[in-house]
Image (cartoon, rainbow, N blue to C red):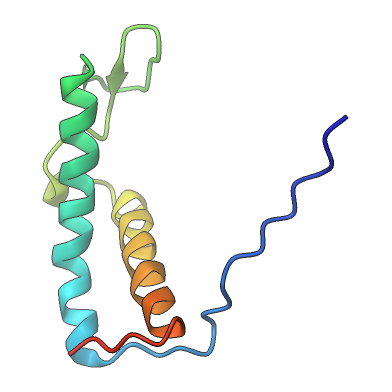
Length: 94
């Protein structure tokens, strides 16, 4: 029997991103979305008003600026956490 999974991500709560870095988060989030969408489209997915795994339809297969704010927030969070993790590892972003 497998043990219960206990995720232990790097603690980035104390890391503050500069205003300059925050400005690029939106552009990077758009790129994350575009990469995700490109992969789905290449796998045969199309736009659909509701997600349907059988029909391979997803309402998020639209340009980033047409996404619901909750979806944009998800992409931004991924980008922010990656940047904060790099800083936690000691890298400098300039």
